[in-house]
Image 1 (tube, rainbow, N blue to C red):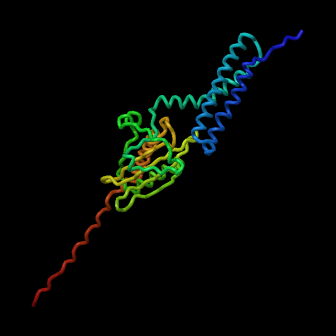
Image 2 (tube, one colour; image 1 turned 90 degrees about the vertical axis):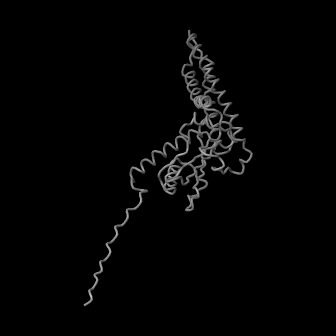
Image 3 (cartoon, rainbow, N blue to C red; image 1 turned 45 degrees about the vertical axis):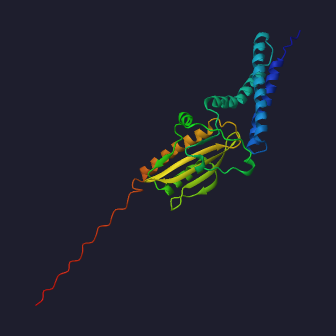
Amino acid sequence: MRILIRTSKWAVLARRLGSLAVPLTIVPVLMHRERFLDSGVFLVVALFAAIVAALAVLAACIGLVRLWHTGDQGWSKALSGLFLGLICLAPFAYYGVQALRYPIVTDIATAPRSELPLIFEPDMADMPAPRLLTAEEQQRFFPNATTRTYPLDPLQLFAIVEHLVQVQGWDIRQRREPGIAGAPGQLNARILTLVGWREEAVLRVAASGRGAAVDMRSASIGALHDLGSNGQRISDFLVTLDSEVTAFLRDNPNINQPAPAEPEEPAAEVEASGGG
């Protein structure tokens, strides 16, 4: 007599849902990055992917409990569905934590925004109004996002800033070196985030006292919440800039020291000839 061992339907459902959640999570991100999906559609599809992944985890948990009690087959199917569902839910969990950690904001700057103008593309003209923080909130959440002043010539500092922007892989859209007459230098760069959001960074280098100062602005294009990316970008960049300038000054201790004065030649002595 043969004893038939059934395969749990919950385990099968869990694996199917988990397998469906993977492309629903990855493909919209790739399409959003390439601008085949606008942000509104992307958010809807991402929410649907999160629901499917959550259902996969739920079905897997139910299947595992039933397998424990009934002895049916399907452990591998249930566990694979659980694994795939959790993997797909991981980015949503991360961004959820970021949303709880940071206030709703889309634009962070270390100086008045009128001094750090953005250059959005024409199709971004109807973007929502930026969400800003008060000075106290910005200091509390992003204490390193402040103006930096260094004992360097503006052109020297601009070169270091531009090098760091290139190292970051940001797409420089506009570049203006500091002018001889004291005009500040400025860089505008476009950043593409991992999930396809577009943000813009503005860096200004201006003469300040005996050195030069750097201010920075970072803003999201069309987003309702930057999840802390703009403030963290400014903080990380300026902290890295601190290290770069420190190393530069250490390796070039006399970079801005006045040239030593040349010794004066002794005046030639003129002997007076006596009359005779």
